[in-house]
Length: 280
Image 1: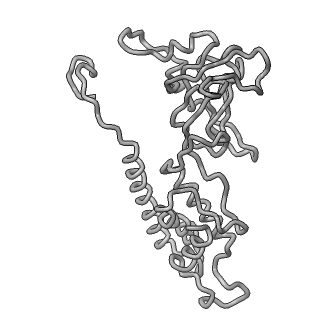
Image 2: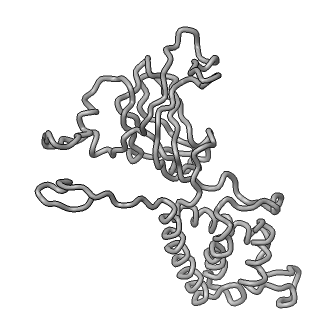
Image 3: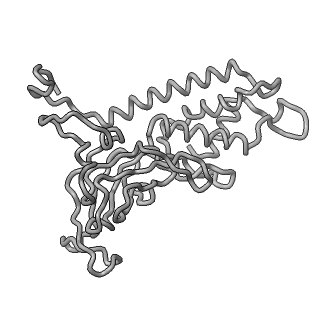
């Protein structure tokens, strides 16, 4: 559905807002500007709750470049979460040969792409003490390493403000801190993000980025926002709560559908749970 179709459906089929229902200078109870604002909020909320907009190709959202002695890297404000990250080096393949990016300074050391993703850890794993255990990998050991090649990333340390001062920008942290030989290397990420841009009255022919199958369902939140106010003509709190509950159920259903796409069969093995024998 285009934004124009979503606007029409919300107004006419869900809110039953018709020009013949009221008298006065305005033809409708809700203006296009107000309903588009509600639609944007519903799309953003659906994207946030379901993580349905996955991006692994757009450099604006999925790439950072390492800097010597810098451990924190604020990501684009549209990024909700980082799903995985991999060091893809500082060059590119030309006729099957991996060569240095020509834009980098002369003398820059060539960094080849890693074949595996960076390990993921949290602040507690990297900066707190853990009882030594020879049978398991202890990510805390990495925090003791001097600057060098990044092996681990974390995204739960803190958030920073966007260009408008709103707190919520995800910050990626690399361990160990990149040293000079590992600077100018690209970290390629898979992320879940918000839509690239909001809908406006000037671009109503665009199609929202959330999956098409969920366009109509996401409008339940817009209907909730429109009806939740206490107003004789506009408000209907009881009906608003019905739309809110319907939206929350759609989120649950969407999560289940998206998880099916990431299905990974269980692998059976022995001794993966201490002294018991269970499937992994």
